[in-house]
Image 1 (cartoon, helix red, strand yellow):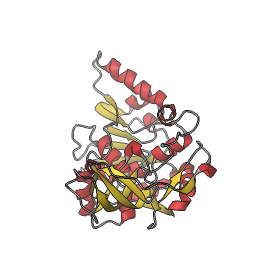
Image 2 (spheres, helix red, strand yellow):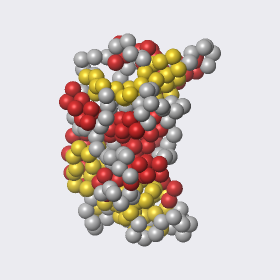
Image 3 (tube, helix red, strand yellow):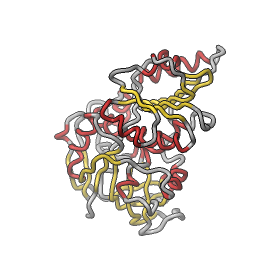
Image 4 (cartoon, one colour):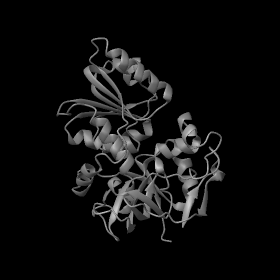
Amino acid sequence: MKAITFTRYREFDSLRLEDVPKPVPKEDELRVRVHASSVNSWDWEYFNGTPFVNRLMFGLRKPRPGRQRLGADIAGTVESVGGRVTRFKEGDAVFGDLWDRWGGFAQYACIPESSVQSKPDTLSFEQAAAVPQAGILALQGLRKFRQIRPGHKVLINGAGGGVGSFAIQLARMYGAMVTGVDAAHKLDFILSLGAQQVIDCAREDYTERGERYDLIVDCQNNRSMFDIRRALAEEGVYAMIGGSMGRVYQLWILSLLARFTRERRTLCLVAEGPNKGLDYLKDLLQTGKLVPALDRSYPLHQVAEALRYFGEGVHTGKITIRIDAA
């Protein structure tokens, strides 16, 4: 089968479309004929060897053999199933997140039965492939707040990207007043998704506006935790989705100190793991309450170009990868 591999961090010319062995499903796995995948920040970070923990796990100087693959989201058709699989059969259309297994930029991938859901028949494979990782991170970020009700103020930093595009729609569905923060060229897109207010991050620092938010979902992590606490309401929650390890450590330290004070604001990292809530998103997608926002689509052999475009930071919503039949 054809798959994208890479042998050197940060070097686009190391991304190659190669013939690799077709994966064999374990007893609890499905082998999926992948029709589409999508680009996530995880792909970009792993390709660049950042954060450093990725190099510790996958190869210090270069990705080691067996870890030279990218792509987490997949949508496709079940080709075969392991002996303990009961929910799916050959020919079923499914979607899910491979997470740190990688290998989604390929014609076939194996994935645990527990990690996939039936693809909504209202979505194309490309639309479905845009959902698993970004949609789940958005949902988990919003769920850090005890219960979003009409009138709650939610700010989404990095609202114009993949996670942000889902977070806006979900927060508005719950009745929240949504403020989206991003670059100027993304602000109209953010408003089109339902945000009531936008902030140009190049012209204004949302932590210095004097506004207080019940929930901040942070997809960019470009402010210190001390600044962010200023922008939280008295019992507000900050949900960090990824970011530098330095800021993660800062969050952990302040969260630990808060246990010994009367601090009522909460700082937390979104790290519940893959596909938890995908069944919930599937129902929203099926009924049209949640719609994937797609930017550009690239064929499998142009993954390098897709990653370059992602790295420019100008995309709105999701970038998808089309995968042709073997």
